Image (cartoon, rainbow, N blue to C red; front, side, top):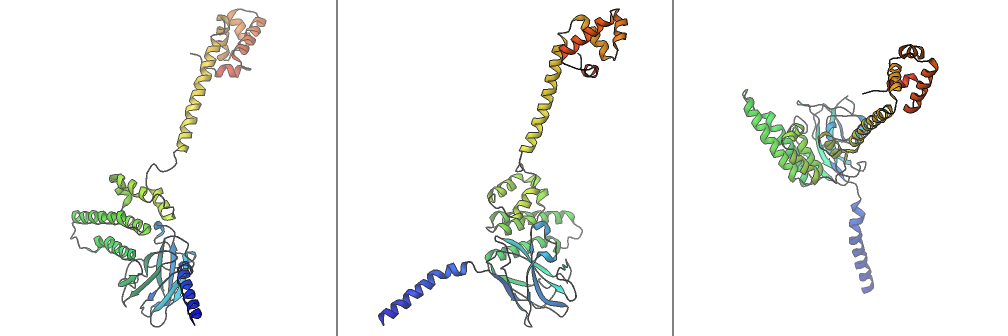
Length: 330
């Protein structure tokens, strides 16, 4: 009996020790209840958004999962098709008769919400019957989801106020909201939620005024190689792009100028080697004069002209009158 008890204890210990390894690789899910009226199709979809710039892009090939919604509103979407790392997802439903890749932006029929998750996330959400479908939504599964919900509500706040035509007041509130979103981005530990906060601001305009903040921010996440951060880095006019193409361009321009000057100087030095008579003949060569014209101009024999021209070609290392014309003389 003691031997049996010992074997049971050993088996239980093995199960406990191996269970984290077994379940660590188990894909997660998004599940919950969605209460819908009769105008909606009874299917919920999840699409993978590659970068934040494609927030409102939708197509069939972006869909990575779906689930039917039962009569009680219950659904479960497994995340086994989700690539590794944190990802930006869109959860949405479509109107009856519409194709799966249908997005309604704004209004009472707005049909989506955004979620940040990874392959092993376990997220639960529930809505209440009303419009828009995802307006009154409770979501749980990780603390960062509450942060993301707060970011969404905060970014929508400036548009929910009646400013009574006061542009100054609107501008002030937008600046306050922007600073709060930057603070969230700076302190949030989840990389995508942090970046999502910045995308709710006009970060390109703010960069010109607060360059130091963005440099420090990118330094903090410099090891994050996700497509979301790569796209963000490309948009900022920082000196993070490789400088070597520009260095090579300037190098070749400088080298070309130097070689040109060197060649001209060498030709200038060679011209100085010409005799007085050869220089006179060379000047006529540059004007396009033929041998007979040179003979007539200086009253010398045609054979003498040919001899001088041959010497000039040899000293200047040229082979034709065309090359002689192209040589610049000071």
